[in-house]
Amino acid sequence: MSRRRKTQLAFDPHLERMVVQSDPTGRMKAKLSGSFYAFDAYFCELCENQTEYSVVTNSPVVVKKLKRGNAKLVPLTDKMIESARARSLKVAERYRLALSGKYGPYEVGKMLMRYCDSTELRADYSYEGFLEHIEPKMRLSEHSRHGDLAWPTRLSGSDPNGPKPSKLYCEHHNPRRSTESRRAYQRDRRFIWEYRALIEQIWSLCINNLTRAHWDIEDQVYVRREAYRQVQAIRSSASMIHDLLSEGTLNQSEIARKLGISRQAVSAAVKKRAQKKVRRQES
Image (cartoon, rainbow, N blue to C red; front, side, top):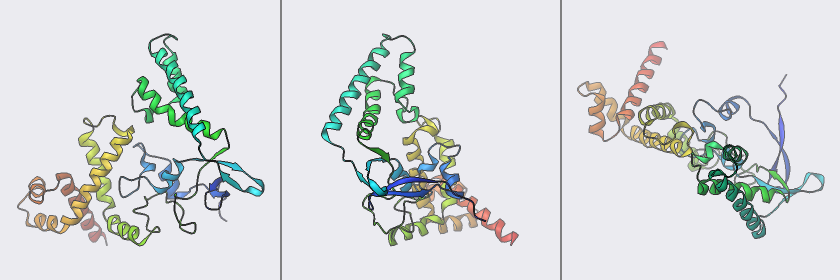
């Protein structure tokens, strides 16, 4: 007997109506629930790009519901943008005065809790940082006054009959998206364990140099991009690393210098070699 799955209404921009969408389960639910490292659910499992699912869920739309479950998109007008800008300036001005102490010692904290997300604010508590942070929120708030917020079920410009956004991979690595993305998936999937190991190593080595560690989105992108770059170096140099390791005349640092790659990349290749050896012995 199959378990009942939770469902919710979502907006399909191609069909222009609300559709029933099932909540993720199993592997996808585990990924979306997050982990020790912030933002893991947002990123492709093979590179630094956002998953297709994250792209659409981070871009809500405003719809006006019609009869029989239909709906239509509500466009964002210049009047809405001007109104949102005026509201943003008004709130930001109060925040500026609160910073000067005019409203007491607690008003700044209250406004940050009400209007801001500490992760997205990225420790910038200045007037300019506050205004930049709240303006898109005010624009969305003003837009949503003219309809209901909804989340699209497909990527912008995608084929209506194509696959739904992947919760595990970006558009470049989703094997169902295109022939090119399938080839990229098959090429990079073989090195997923090296990629994950390099992410861990880069975090541990660069933690003092990165600005705000695990909860900063820019640091997350940097670490994953660097890990992916090193994985490409492993992929192109894997056979050479294996040959040099087999000779036993050079250590990991020397091999890295000889091949022009990082020592972490060589270390990841060594670990994979050891794992393969163990599996062969067990089989």
